[in-house]
Length: 314
Image (cartoon, rainbow, N blue to C red; front, side):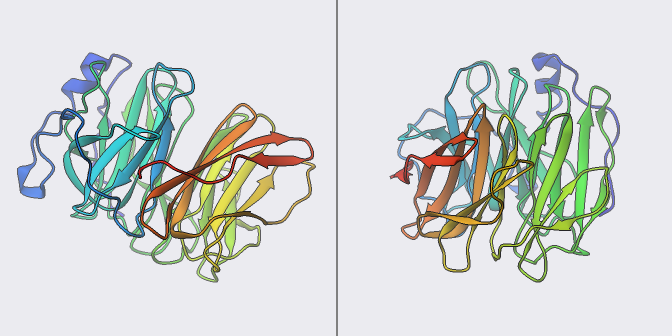
């Protein structure tokens, strides 16, 4: 995955960030990417794992991001209204983050297989989609540790996980963190206690996890053929997957709680995505009717209590 990026990048100012994201790229179908007024949104595309992030500058508003049947990207709270994130088009599902309390970003694999991104403006609109290069073969997984520090991970053409990091100095270069990822699946990432962790599906369909910068991937059992989710809560990490039976499963890491994968019900045709806040997680996936469903978990030392799967998009 050869880098075609420079190290110049956005600073902490939203105005300077926005100015860097306005280059039209009509030849790739990713130009003029400003959010329009909310109206009847198209249905989610079958099999495309949704994204989720808490809305920047708010308390507790969880936004869903999904790729529609026409490959456009849409976002909104549970039940809508949903608005289009520009007019960019993706292969597979998007990945979204809240960087500190300043920005919302959304990332995806463009139709040219490069990584593309967009950010939200104060007026609620979204910037033009802009290429960050690379050569992806999966949905990306994104994670933020502050309003300046965030990273994106994806499966490269050699099957390994490739990373792209942003700091106050701007974007770095694509670099590999290893692994051998199952084709058709992408990494999930989460930040806890000063470190980023990445969860992937190996070619044997089992799950593997890595503390980035501290060794390679270690097996954690389970079995799936879809994108995993990874969320950080107050004392641990929680992984989420669609099992080979189509049901949702979870596994709690970095905790004295009983290990192993346990069922959380549901029936899905996509991978799962997850975000954490305090002692709660929110997990999202596409049901067999191709609508997004959400399940909120409340975590104690003995285990989770789940709200049950409820419809987000229809």
